[in-house]
Length: 133
Image (tube, rainbow, N blue to C red; front, side, top):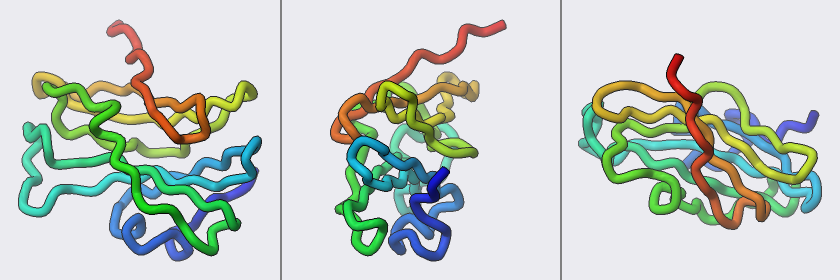
């Protein structure tokens, strides 16, 4: 396993987040980091604008990083509130798919799910949340 970034080596914008999640893209030899941050002044649990999941990548082993890409327009549904990249780490499947666990609130109820990319982080999509028990 290879670490993409640590809390002190990742770009400053990601270190402000309490959850900095690393994933290493093997086919492109590119570390990537997913993280979330809050919109200033908007921290309510019911807000649909208070958190943003962003993704950055490095092509030089973490010496420099891309500009953050906001994933919310691609993965956040309009009625979701409090969406964030959840605890743990993103993974890469043998197929090359990057998978990041997320948590979101819908109607005040928290749900676990995931987002994924099949093109090395260029685009992201919603996975299917588990069916309730």
